[in-house]
Length: 186
Image 1: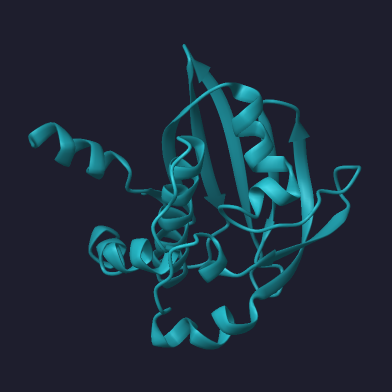
Image 2 (image 1 turned 180 degrees about the vertical axis):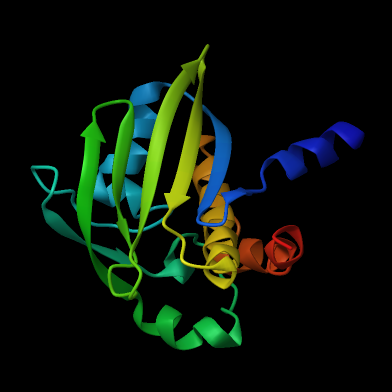
């Protein structure tokens, strides 16, 4: 039971500095499968947000997310997200980096006054793939808490998908850690 607790704690994101949060997950390979979950708009939409990446770095693209559609299992969203979840959410982002099979980065929250950036880096480790997600230019602690809960839940869904399992409802996973980041980022 102790090792299970350690593994659960390892899944929590870390606040690297006042403006950066980082998550790591070790996922089953092959590398091509995990890369597809990051760059293929349809595959990314299975765990995070759909939308085709543009042809070139520096170009904009649209992403669409409806959290309740990330699993066939359903649970109601928290009150503060009911409206967003009912209609889904669209955002126009800019591709910042694309290094095939290794790294992709783009803006995040372009409609937010202090646009941040998210980067995904893949590192092969035997037959597993380490995914490092770094969210930079986080404007403040409240935003860090908010995006960390979201990334935690999205990465849990990705883990299930990568393992070929049906994920639990997104909102159930989100609720499990709802207050954790508030306490961790003191």
